[in-house]
Length: 346
Image 1 (cartoon, one colour):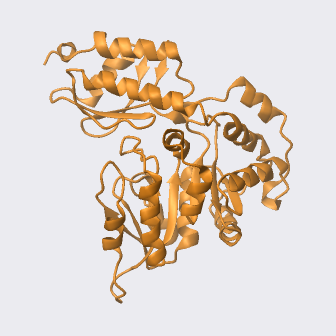
Image 2 (cartoon, one colour; image 1 turned 135 degrees about the vertical axis):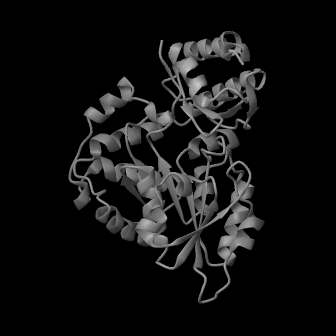
Image 3 (tube, helix red, strand yellow; image 1 turned 180 degrees about the vertical axis):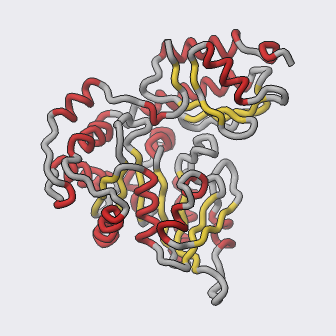
């Protein structure tokens, strides 16, 4: 029994999702003539109380399009140092938009309103213009950390008071919302733009959505095209995203609860130095000195459990819909009884 905890991006469409995809009505989306893409975009916009949405191949693309649409060269993006737009998008803010970045050291990948306020540049010729704040909810590198709506709104007030655009990298936003109980409409009213990923815990094979007002999305479509993101009969894959939004949100709570249970076992293990607080479906933990990630992953792989290194001394587990209750039971058994510090002959 192979247990793949490398990421929630490894999910495969269920039979029900595949049937829904197979029966999709399609057209040419570059000409806005794909009815399934149009339906998905309208559904996403309505979900967040926004005017429009744009379907794209990836979350990196939706984030980069948002940054490009909100800024111009000589501007600056403010974000937490562990945020995806800084760590894992290949410097796209510089390559695509010609802007600077101002990274802030928060806690578990989260910014505080006062930190944002202090980071805003003064209007001098020799400084970039602070123009956009990007937050990630949940924060991947922060261990799946979750912002409260109060925390998000406090940052939003700073943005509004200083003419800054406010973008949410919501790749795993629904993992947060099933915990906090906040509505998508409340999230939508807080941000100028939001990116959501369909191919992680929601289980679609590909695709992300960018939501915002009509003018923003109209300009964003041009940037999608120039980045090579214009698609033709995209309704087949858009159907998977539509199915995911209509059927797979509530079950994310199962993934979160399973991750919390895994974190509790690891917290009691003698081969673990520390576990980041587990709030959603991501578990990041540090190994004790003498055990390297490569050693630990090799031990797991021999037991048909697969995970990823996430730093010089860290491992990441991510739960998702392709992980069954039986797999979790087996994982718990391995972590609690079959692996110990003695397994590594320290």
